[in-house]
Length: 487
Image (cartoon, rainbow, N blue to C red; front, side, top):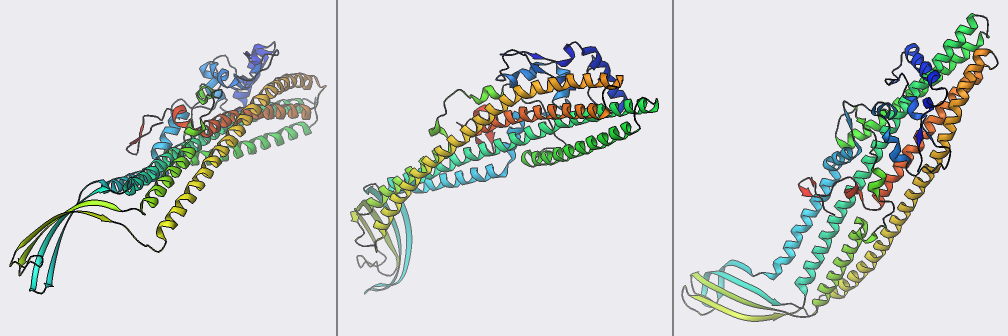
């Protein structure tokens, strides 16, 4: 465990507050100053306690700050911001690929009913007209009923194959839900990242403008070279260009988020939930057999096994009971020679194919090949999941290590900047040194935020790879395109 400390709580706290308050007034930039007069940069100045810098709980702790500073630091907008879980739910509920997958499920379930119809009686009617016997021309209406009694597993195999493919389609729906959820979560984190970087970039502009004012004042008083304000003005322009680049990236990711969620174009993402790492269940073993891709491959194997059973059953006869009744509407009934007579029959039948050109053997070979391919797909799905999970874990672990270092780096640069500012005022430090210190403060702050969002990216990728998207984002039990999402 560790504790978070803010720079303004150090011995130079009052100086930092006055400094950043002046920056906000002089620069004309909205730096989200809080009630104490401290700009939102104080949020980015949070540091780990010097002893035992374990960043393991950093993800949750950054949200325990006062609301005013947390909002400024995360680039939020209380009036229209949307949370990560809501964004995922919106994307899943509106994405056309999920609706298409659900349509495939409904189609395959219809084919299951088609296969099951083989268990039920088959009723048919017909009409024949012409010279049906030596008795002359007649018109005969026929009604027939057939009920399969035993077929050595032909119908059972067709039903099993259809059910296996239906389960596969359902698993593919879950896989598509997980995929869309991941895309939405990544887009939300990227929008949030650039929201935060936008705030940091504006604060950098305000800070460099303050240096420019100091340089102009000293140059006008003859205490510094006339080149000092020129150098400072160049850094202001550079910082503004950087801000424009960040805002361009922010607009691009907002557009992607809009396409995924079918929401507004100027969408603000609320602070990332503090329980995101908790719902990912990083310490809980992953059940690979419950992954949608593995379920789909296993269902395909079951379908191939049922296809094999049905193909082998084709070698044996099918027994059925058949009943028929025909009525001569005009002329003579060809079955009994009676004028406009009727004829009824009921019989037990058995039929079997003697030769189909090798079709049965080919079906058996195809089913065996399908089972082997499905087994390979299961192994591949588990291997891919293990690789993605391992990669996500390493991303999380690496981000935590970087955070611990970057927080210390930021702390050191903030202290260095304040020292250089005092030395520049006294004339013992050049304006270039002070400008470089401001640039290093910006880079340290931006790098820390990049690592923090990289940590969140690793978490959402782990959630997707472990098949926990529906549980983590509270999608289980919700109705999507008319279908309830289940585990």
